[in-house]
Image (cartoon, rainbow, N blue to C red; front, side, top):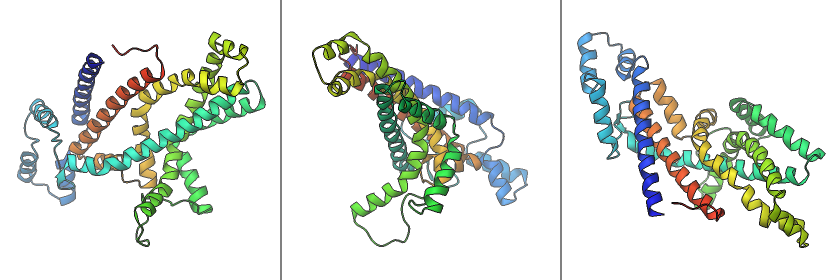
Length: 323
């Protein structure tokens, strides 16, 4: 186990460095920078003033030296300074991080619960009308664009029915509430963003879980349990479900980065104050230190999540050994 953790930590570090390199190259290949934005906003056309701004923000040195300085700072969690906010990037990331993690966790939980339940339900009624209905709904939600689904859910549940808030993470100017009231208020605002982001992945998990359950239910040890007279519910949930769940765990680890990318659109639609909203604002303003900071943080979260998935995989399947 210690050797496995050490090896995975080294691999994770290399992955984060690779993300740093790729992000820095792509950011520097993009046209324009923060000085162009500042000059346009301030109406500055004087070449000396623009040159002064480039010196002030360290853009007058070669790209290789800027990357080395950024890499050295990132090792101490110094991700640069945001000219737009007048604050360190690390502070902005830490401030917005809880909202994004809450949204991603709620979306994945929604997707896992709905997808796993639908997959098991369809597998136990294979080739029936219910199996066909689950498959049709899975294809529908998989093919539906996330932004369109978000807008339609907002129109139905927020505008027409008034059951959920339209945007934000909490009610502004409401009556004073205790910790429990505040938590319930945040949960109320979280429902639509989490469902909008999670339905796409629920469709994937439903299809994978159905196929995995059908495969496991046909194995010898399941047939033996049935031959011993064990109840079908016990056979499904005690013997088959645990092994059928392993592909879902693999997908959770692989798709975490994709969920963060999808959260950018959902956060923008619902005005959710997370890293996605911060990233959109930073790209619009050419605030590249913030863009880099958000990408680095996302890479760290994905690396850590995949390590946790590996550990959970070994806990669920005794045949897996972490060596």
